[in-house]
Image (cartoon, rainbow, N blue to C red; front, side):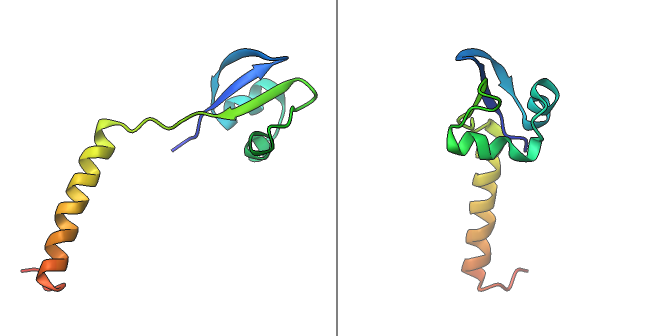
Length: 82
């Protein structure tokens, strides 16, 4: 999953982007976007990056429910599925 960042240019919101998109837009190596975001430090005294809250999609809820169901079966069976 690619994380998204809110990107600001001189304090003005310019969009929601992945690290790869930020690299294309600003020239900052995508591997360092999270460093700047975690330190709340501006890149080139211009760009700020903030992690966006991850949205939990319907498929993740379904996956978690399936996982819980099968995990329960395995634990109940003592690992002996049949």
